Image (cartoon, rainbow, N blue to C red; front, side, top):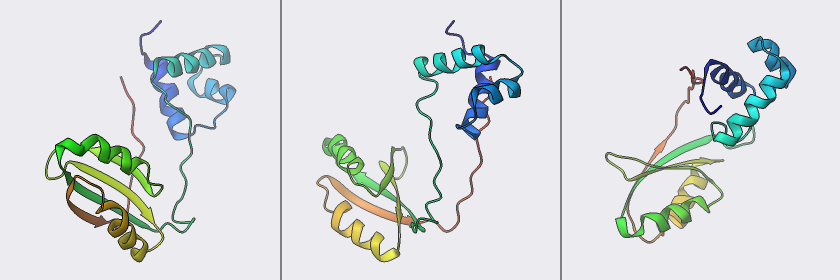
Amino acid sequence: MDKFDKIDNRIIDILYKDASISVPKLSRAIQSNAPLVYSRIRRLLKLGYINKYTIEVNEELLGYSVLAITGINVDPNFRQDIIKELLAKELVRRVTEVTGRFDILIEFRFKSINELHDFISAHISRIEGIQYTETFIGMKKRARDPIFSI
């Protein structure tokens, strides 16, 4: 059975909010039996609906209080090399190819504005093929959990 249904949808919705939930507790939440829920989770993993279980870390408590997003324009001949090099840098959190004003958006977390400045100057601006950068400092981040529905 490869069809995605309401049970799968409910499992993903609950696991997204709390990946540490036990199968018995999840089973009670969706009013189904534990063996069925366990087999559904295994199937969702196998089919690629679930990529991994993870946690959300409060980076501000760890001292990474500066959120920065840098938009870059790149020479198309260097695009894949640039992406590979960006992803190899420890402080890079996310690299997204986009349409619009920039070619790529990079998300970082830093402990200070000086650390951000040093990183952009020493690492990002020196990558071959990057033509232009513009960095935005996050002032306040708000987010909500997505609702998965079929």
